[in-house]
Image (cartoon, rainbow, N blue to C red):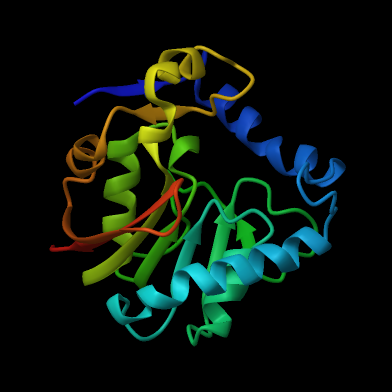
Length: 209
């Protein structure tokens, strides 16, 4: 298993780096659409509804906990898809966020067995894959579902190491192949995966306690 972690002096430095992402995002326009928030937020909600709708059949009725949800577009999408009590956590959810509360997904601020489903699309922002896996397993009910969206690692090809060594693009975590992800989430059983476009892979897991 080959995993790559960005080098931080300590966990506090990691938290500071990741917490700064929302403020930077809110200040700049989307390069492709030239949109700013909240226009981008509504577009992201529509994106999540379209791409997550086919996965409803794998999830358990109830709610979804969204990890690293920032402003909460995925939370709103899950609510529209029928998971009414869904909620997100993020290190910096901004002010007066209706969908996301402040929280660290390495130390999820909810009790054991409190969610039937968990979703994340921020695997590249993690500090410790094993810690994350254990925390998700802890808050999920037995046979709970874990839905993960990741940027397709194959797109990087020969430029992988250049990407990893670049402080401009490299967030905090990277991996070589799909098997690395399966090995990292030891508490889970792989169910299914789907490429939803040429750059994005969605993986469905189930935990067994």
